[in-house]
Length: 61
Image: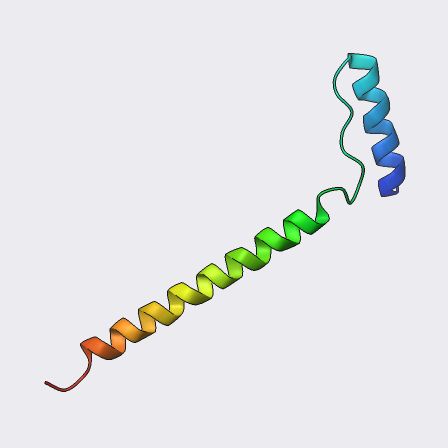
């Protein structure tokens, strides 16, 4: 079953049950990609901070 057929089936079921229709495929793709890249940047920032702290702790006194 293609994504279009699944969407049409979900829309039909929602209409039959009186529920709101699901969003069309691809509607929130940009938002999902943006959130993923934000998460990756956040993780990279944590690694940089962790590495800097570990170097600071290992420095000669």
